[in-house]
Length: 185
Image (cartoon, rainbow, N blue to C red; front, side, top):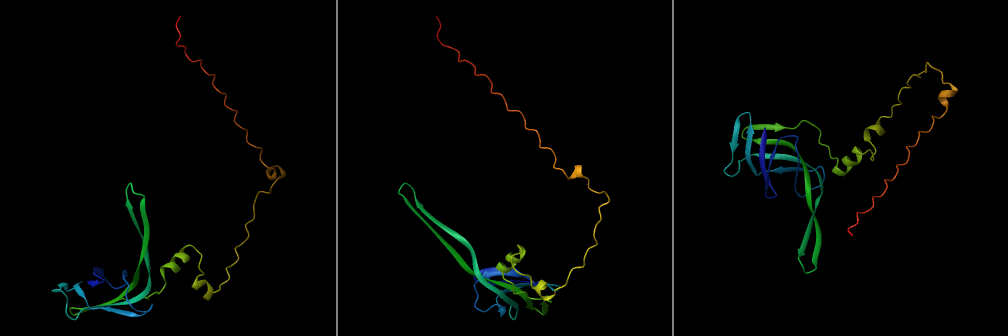
């Protein structure tokens, strides 16, 4: 089942389990948000269109985080006048996890766990810079691997350093050609 909702002057097609980024909404991380502006529902019973909204339909979501969006650069210039101005802006946005859709006699609910991990924390974990929660909870010693015995004993000749590679001979410079003279006698 899916729904088309309207928030922040934009429309979003959502289904349970989706993560969407919308204009900033009030609330703390982990709070529940409900959208009553449902424009369309689609599911097993077919598509239901609103005129403009579907009465009694609602979409439930959990607020994962509120953050600043990507930086937008503003650059103004008037040519041949020496006028240049650079500015930037970062819009506040909210990240939502859709947890359920209710309306038109159908209900759809997401059975998964709502993770409140922020984008910054996910990036740090992906690069291996943040401590993993699973590793700290369960401290299991890895089993010792059996030693591998080399069948061929090392000899002294093999232990010596290999001979240095020969250098390529230097290239000879081509003799300079005399310029043709333009004097004719």
